[in-house]
Image 1 (cartoon, protein in one colour):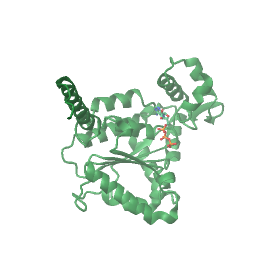
Image 2 (cartoon, protein in one colour):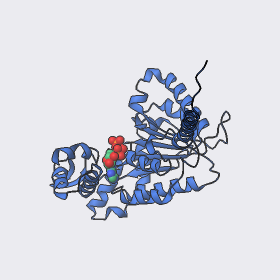
Image 3 (tube, protein in one colour):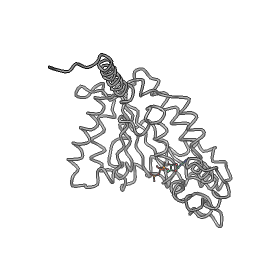
Image 4 (cartoon, protein in one colour):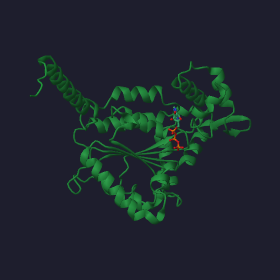
Length: 317
Ligand SMILES: Nc1ncnc2c1ncn2[C@@H]1O[C@H](COP(=O)(O)OP(=O)(O)OP(=O)(O)O)[C@@H](O)[C@H]1O
């Protein structure tokens, strides 16, 4: 004879079953990232705020990026993917800005499964494997855009990327309506490089020598020098490509070298980020020990921008 469960236990088990089902539903529909407006939602006010309050000393980049990203994200039917090429010395905020853009489009920011970061020297280190990389990259971009048209691809150290590899991504950046059944027009491509950094520094230095405020520097003051130095430099992977003459890059965005005062701002922000009360004395001690491009005894531009501040601060706190 089989023992029968009391009705209270049966009810309890059924209840537990429903609860488990509900939890699974909640997990998949609310926690698992999906390519829809719950997870991908452009926050123009947030982008504007972050570029204004968190990014220091980059008035040109802040303006160009706000315009470019807003125009693209608000366009119902973009004719091509958005392609931004960010240039400047190390530690001036190129990766940081990419992160700000990602955070204001994707709920999960840089950890979103729709944001993909490639670094030339670690993802594509061997020239002899170039054909393999081309196939992998093609599959990766195509596969991901098929899953989510609003995907973002960031290529760091773009100037160190093999020209053949750069050329292989060109079709995705173009005006095609669809390529093998996939449309790339909603995607965002961001290229980061130090290429052209020297010429940006020269322009900033020139303004400094004339005693002019760096905020007077405009995109047109830098654009020509930047494109000449990036695309006429035979050591740059970008030189060999036809990205520029095919007009595939929508905006070349210069990042100015950072001054001592910007390093102080970065230091204070970093202290707050680390959970400390921002203390100017601590930050000044740290900032004074960094290396600067000098004119006489005057510190002009920080050699590492704000890059090593996070690790250096720990020593002074
Ligand atoms: N202009 C800036 N405003 C505020 N913080 C900055 C700025 N530039 C750099 N930082 C800080 O320094 C860190 C490192 O900068 P980031 O990685 O963006 O530099 P990068 O220009 O990409 O350098 P690299 O060319 O070496 O990759 C950032 O995470 C940020 O905390």
